[in-house]
Structure formats: structure tokens, C-alpha cells
Amino acid sequence: MTTRVCIKKTLTSGNRRFNLDISFASSGYYTILSGPSGSGKSLTLRCIAGIETPDSGQIEIGERVLFDSEGRINVPVRERRVGYLFQDYALFPHLNVVENIGFGLKKLLRPLSGQDKVKIAELVEIFGFKEMADSLPRDLSGGQRQRVALARALVNHPSVLLLDEPFSALDHSLREKMRAELKAVQARFNIPVILISHEPADIRAFEGDIVEYSGKGAAHKNSSSGTGLFSISGYSTEASCQKIRH
Amino acid sequence: MFNVIELSPLLITLKVAGLATCAALVAGTALAYALSHKSFPGRDWLDAFLTLPLVLPPTVLGYYIIVVMGRNGFIGRWLEQYFGISLMFTWQGAVIAASIVSLPMVIKSARAAFEGVSSDFENAARTLGQSETSVFFRVTLPLAWRGILAGAMLAFARAMGEFGATLMVAGDLPGRTQTLSLAIYDAVEAGNDTLSMQLVIFTSIVCIIMLVFSGRLLRTEY
Image (cartoon, rainbow over all chains, first blue to last red; front, side, top):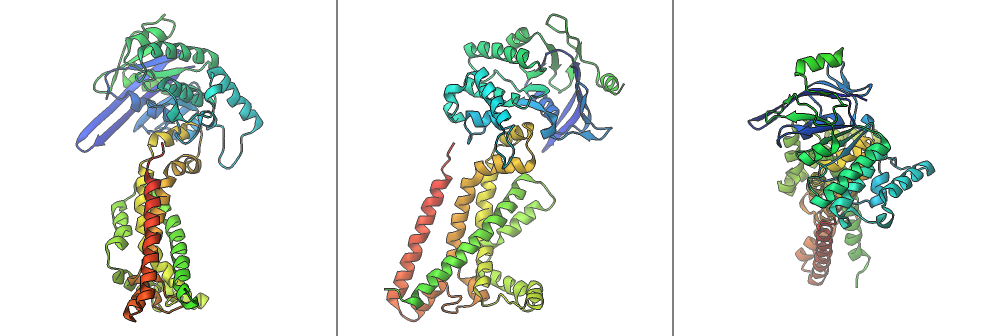
């Protein structure tokens, strides 16, 4: 499955301007967005998820076009089927662990179907949440919160998992554990992962394609530090956008 | 201690303030949601307009209500013509006056409560396949309801104490439109110290209770 992103977006706040001009294509399991803070990595993830709308460009995941400014395609967030792990996890504070995990399956005013309950129980089992099923997020540790957020993001079978600095809030020993957990999740659910990280340890651990952001928000060509199995592409914007258009 | 005539201001007040609070709660929540979540031209002006009842003298509000709802007002004339009803000097008119004065209480509290809900929660719900209606009822409202309810309690206290606009719109008809605050005025004017004392203490106690409970609601839960 190839993920193609080629977007431009300008943000203005007061008299400050920020230009995001990024394009990359990645067919690996892992894509790592790396670079200084404020270079537009989070904004890129938000554009892929549909939370923000780019000014122009295209976003494709596999065969699905999520956004195309020329074709006037802008799939709403709820139909994009992306799993998004927010930096502070954004677990619903009023819902317990099981309700958080099952959130994406429940429809307003409708009880969960038996099938959905089985799905939730499965995730609870996989992640080992049985003992804390009734706990509220405020009673969980940082690592537990992140695992709940990960399980919640997986419940709708997303076609891509977007992780915004997933390990930055965790201490060292926990980071190792969570990297292993993420790898296990990726293998089990077989979905591509795009994650933001500054950590060399993450880049080593995930052997993915690396998209390097400069301070100005543009991406540069960079070779993969991994096995070389996955192609890395950091075309200039024009070339990449044309490539996407065919 | 209370005979029927003396009890009627209480009942009228509860009826008027209760209905006015319900109206202000529904309209105020919807308006606060729009003000906090949508950006549209003239939002600041709408906000200022909706805050007016908080700062305008009640007599000015009463005048506006008479101009709009009175026999010659454009809504008043329409009501008279098609339904044969007039709101002037009725308890329903008092409800309208009270809901307009208490509306800003709900809007201010509800808007602060809505803005206190991190957009990450709402976006997380959207990435989990939820429609905007679902996001509102499953995330935004459950996280904001305490602030909204606190606003409704302040609105009730304000509606209960409404005097000026009510007097102009609904008059001071004992047993029909005479609310507590109007009854207190009459009792003091008539030199009925016992009655005015009773009504004043009752009103103060209800308002204290409302303030304590709305304060408790505003303490953060999570």
C-alpha cells in the first residue's frame, strides 16, 4: 500500500505566516516524519486525517483518494478511516476504558451490536485491559493511556495509523516497551503507520521511510536508514504532484 | 401563615421563572454552541447584541418588548390577527420578559463551557467515524453540561428577580401577573412589613441555594 502526500497550506496568525509545502510517497510499513518542532509535521498528519484542509494538493492512501484540490475531492474526517493517536491521547475523560475503546463502533442512540461487543472484548483481551476495564482515563498511568488510545484508534479497522509523537511523553523504559507494542500491533493488524518523531532510537527501531522537514516546512530528499526494502521519495513538490496525477 | 392570595406570587414566580429558564436554556445553548464553534461574519456583533439584556436598564428592554410584542408591534399584531391573542398583561408576557433577561446568563456560561472542551476530543471522535450530531451529543455536551447547567441556575435566579421589564410588559396584577419581586414592592408600599419580610427572606434563600449549587457544578470534575 502506497501513501502519497503532496500538499500546500499557508497558516497566518497575526503577522506571522507559516508555509507548509510537503510531498512524499511511501510504500513501507513505517513512515517517519522528522524535523524541528514547528516545521509542520503535526499539520501534515492533521491534513491526512482531514482535521485540517490543505490549500492545494493531493492525499492518497492506497487506491483511495482522500483529498484532491483539482478534482474537488475532500473526504470528510469521519469517512477517511484513519486511526489517529493524539499527542496527549485525547481519551474521552467521561468514559471508561471499554467505552473509550468501543467509541468508534457505537452510534448515537443505538446500543452496541453483539458483533461489536465481541470486537471490543477482543481488543481488551489483546491489550490486557481486563482489570482496568471500568477505570476512567484520569486513573490510568501515561503508558496505559497511550495503549487505550491505540486500541481505540484500531477499533474501526483504519487504513492507516497516524501517531503524533507517540513516545515523547513516556519515560525511557516505557518507550522501549511501547515501540515493541506498536510493532506487534502493526504486524497483527497489517496497517501502514505514519509517525512523528525526533528520536534517533525510533528511526532505528522502525526502519521506515524518513521524511525530513526543514525549519521552513518543506521536505528534503533523504535516504532510508532501514533495510532498503522500502522506497523513499522526497521529490520536489512539482515532480511528486505530477507523479500522483499520472 | 400564607393565605391563597399571598401564595400566588410564589406560584406565579416559579411558573414564570421555570418556563423562562427552559426557554433560555434551549436557545442559549444553541446560540453559545454557534458562537463557540462556528465562525461567521458579525459574530462579535451577535455576541454583543445577545449580551445587551445584561447591561441595558430593564425598562429599556421592557420598551423594546412592548414595541415588538405589543398590539402595534410586528409580532404582536401577527399574533392578534391570526391567533387572537395578546401577550400584554399576561403571565406569558412575563415569561418572555424573564427569558430575555436571563438569556445572557446561559449564553455566557455555556459558551465558556463549550470553549473549555478541547477540540482534540471532538477531532478524535470525528476520526472514529462520528457525525457532527454524534460528536455534539456524545462528546461536547457531556463534557460541557455542568457549565451549561450552572448557567441555567443563574438564569433561574435572575428570572426570579426580574422586575422592571416584567412590570412594563405584564403589569402588576395580583393573582395573575404579580411575581415575588412585584409583590414585595407592593407590600413595602402598603406598609405590610410582615409580608414583605417573608417574601424577601424566601427570595434570598432561593437565590443563595442557586448560587451555591451553580458554584459546585462549576468545580471541574475531570
